[in-house]
Length: 263
Length: 227
Image (tube, rainbow over all chains, first blue to last red; front, side):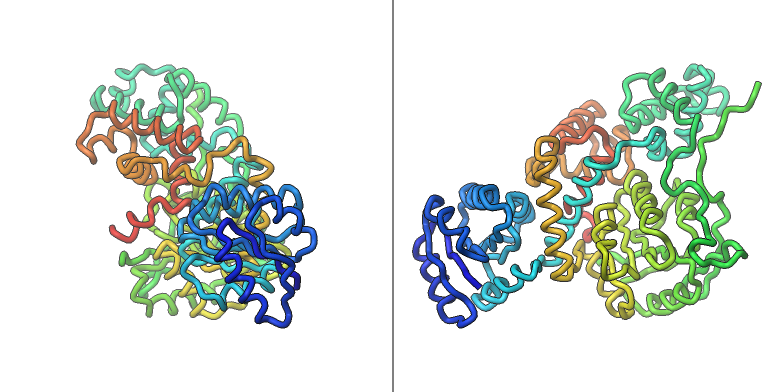
């Protein structure tokens, strides 16, 4: 395995070079402390061991330049603090793996072949931030909002009031209809507009009516095709409670927007 | 540490019973309930007295699980979904993480591994195998390269003030602006300003997106363990 050690700090780089020289399975390609020297040697290496000490912006920039110039290169960044946003910064710049600042030399040397195998070590405390970022990127990328999904954020009472708004009721009408104070209705209306991210009751009403035209959602709301899953024809069984309790959830299978009564 | 209320979604009643017995022994877990269908989760809308949902990839297709997680994210962004019984090959695990799973457990895992995973989730942590972590990092890089211009940076959460973080945590509890104002004893107008600022800094266009972003980015780790 051909390793290039790189980094702004020449002392650190030479220490890593010395560590690599102790490993018969590793060949040191060079030790570089400028980005120009590094870019010149990256094509001759399998893994770049980039050591950083604090200089986050410069470090991230090095990773970005290396991986932009050589998209197939593998960069192991060594010496990152345990801070999710810094780790994410390096990863999104193109790092293949990282070793935190408080780790051992052994861990770094073990990480080099792991990087070659496409593996990485991510601490359990850091993993949620990476997973969350992945989900967030994925949602922005591939999940256009289905009409009606915003209604899910409403409480049943808010949904009921929105339904009345959609039937052109004023706050006073709604208050009389539901036997509550006008002030309470106003609070609910405020809350509805906030949750739907809308400016006016008319906007909310037309959103609600648009959502009525189809099921609220297109993902799980249709009953499952049990046969394809190999489940029996008996349908669902009782809900089983823990600690000897047994209970059944008797609410409907899925919530639908209630249609206004005809007439 | 807070004790957890777990909801298990699985069509296999034997497996469900096994988890019920297993979890009854765990001090971390306060209560467990089982439902058979993912649509039964939606029937619980309004009150959702669970902290974690354990759903089985052996019982439901990945698209069904992803649909359920999308709904969960919009309605109960504070609830963590852990998927068990995930095939080791073919990238299903990564797809589930992309769909919003907190973590997943490979198929044929021992009860101990499942309990460990739930314990980690309770601490705000997720255990990733080295192969999964490697694949996750490659995918992150790929997606962020493709959408760099449209997204708030990974440091967006760091830009929030302590007050804004607090408000984000309350938004994640589905509280309206007026409820937040009551809770923090401030004017509704002040809350609105904070909410606007949070949405802007996180680059999202509504409060549930912001809450989901906060949860995924670990903004509430302290809040959860402290309550």
